[in-house]
Length: 420
Image: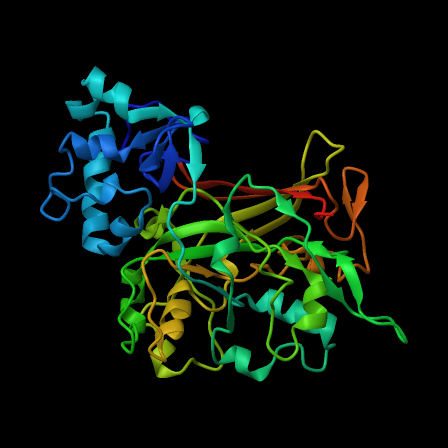
């Protein structure tokens, strides 16, 4: 018999009892931030559940991890504690369990309508790394910038390429993004152009939230890497293509990337995604032993990108892709990050890089969709090469189960004009 909650959850809801993603919220404007899980159209206040002494398992009994303003302490506890919390919450929210269902006072205090809350960044992000793990995206970028002779550089097939991003500009879904200014390629005989980016783009990504992390000098074994991943969020790593193209040689992205990165508010755990695990693509050449997994898997997460111009009421779908298209897995990314002894910490953010599929309509950014502005994209009659001021970009992601949906909510942001 399928697990069912006493809270009515629509079949299309992203947040059934099989999901229970974690976030941080304020129930009212003046409230302090506190952890919660999403269930249907409600947020379950975990500080109230903890205060009622309902986290009574051996690992969470008397813990203050749900009385924190973020999830860092909880994610640092590791997989046994995460599994204990999930089992407790699924039992409390199930249709057959009276503890919360029949306690009107506790229900009133702990179940807050989603429409009323303010959602915040779920973790304090100390560090942020962005990978480049989609073969289709890598090939397309290589074709655009280097041509067909050598679209994918040799090192890419041997290691998960990445760069260090800027944690301070990671923002929660719904935050406006100011169009960045910077230098771009000079025209012949002229100095570099300076001004607002003319090639502002989205990047369809997902990102892992690091759990316990590792000590400095002690790499994470590839076959234990999943124990260091608390869960996954949607991520839009906005990109100013013109600024990036001029600055990135020889040290890589800087001002073209660090002005804003948007993540969705709900962290979907690996336990919730496990029913949707699928075999990862065959890697050729085989990876080095430290990247060779006993079980190499991705997750079947359908992804969509919608763009709504300011003058339109309805958004247009511009991309449909899937997390399963990644060449380098989430666990390979994490293990490689630590192989030199680098220490990851609870709450660190590891982006996948743009997730593109094999079809033209599954390309994960405008750079690919318009082939660097050579073509135009029609949004219900409005043409776009890159993003214009007022455009709102929204990502969604979900997995379809038997009678339920595991979803991530929305990851959205609107472009506003550059500061004068």
